[in-house]
Length: 80
Image (cartoon, rainbow, N blue to C red; front, side):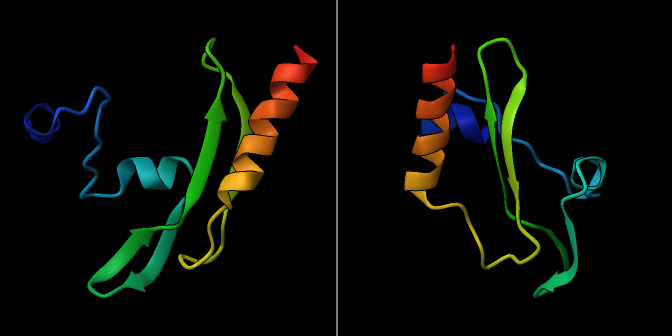
């Protein structure tokens, strides 16, 4: 596996039929050079596996800023 060869400790997803992308409403139709791509999305999933925050962009050029993600995590920690 690619992840084994590179030393990654997390699972990588290959989704050539866009099955998972569609399930999570992340399909950005005809936005890629060769067709459909996933639109950017960031998720904060807590240790129990619950999605605490999601940032779904309508444009492949827009991403959450690192500071924004860290603020979400800090707020979650303080609320615990």
